[in-house]
Length: 98
Image (cartoon, rainbow, N blue to C red):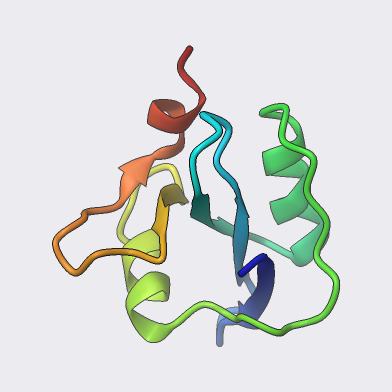
């Protein structure tokens, strides 16, 4: 289910979650981005070559997703969607490698 959303954190930053087609061509991936604001979060993804847009707030990040992205040094993670309970989050470079 393509979609996405955001959550504004108490410190003023945001976590953006997007479900996008997998660049490898199979299924979808859920991408999480932590940034100072929504436009900056989308710019981080666009700078990686992804065409992303956030229209609405239909699928905001869950509390578990927020925790995962806040504890990652890059603040940019992904995993397949819908996720299996055993799949861990991956750094974004693992998704974009040829």
